[in-house]
Picture (cartoon, rainbow, N blue to C red):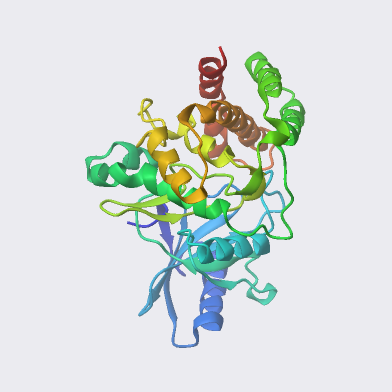
Length: 338
């Protein structure tokens, strides 16, 4: 199982655009691994909102993953690719299961901005992880493993290039993004007001945050559980409990609503592991605010994805479909705040 869902394989006999990309990837492989390395195929994969992701299949070498950004408009909040490389290396050095970075792209590669990394085998489809019998054994340990991984990530030394953002600043920034959509959603406006009233402000210490740590960005092995943490483009320095609350948002439970951690575990399991490494004493109800904030944040992201499609920046059925999920976040916010 690959760590992304495969689309059809692109061989050199495919469309003209694919020919050029294939030849450039082949040149990249020769530059990085030497002239003996031979590219067999390159598949463009699902996943990643601001960058293309390719599975690179080689003869006589393990498969690799290529991430490259080819469009000027990146996902709001997405960092530069060279910073994405830096934080994955820092996280991996700190014990987090981030993919190993093999090489950064060079302008001479003519593939845009990006990098090659190791391919971690496992499942990333959240519904399968949360519900398939094949992952029953993994689900017994996943919440605990996630708590450990987040504690190790939050202890990573802060990069000089990463600026801290408080919850009040995040609320203000997202409110401005919401207004820019020109779409009036009363529940969102109510949520901004209520969360502003309940905000812990400066009382919540800031630390490194993955920014999108959830079921769907985790590589999971059926028996061993968590094997990798993907999609680091939204890394930032932010409120300590933000990552943990995001993992518990209802949209990432894939129908297993009672299993509040990613559809596979309980908050008590998550926090017991997190506290054991971080030295904290956080309790399950400490995540209530952060789950509500995560639901609102996801609703704004859904709006943004739809707007990118509707405004003609990217014609994408996927973006349009994500926009329809705004209604889910409205219900989740009503449940969390009333």
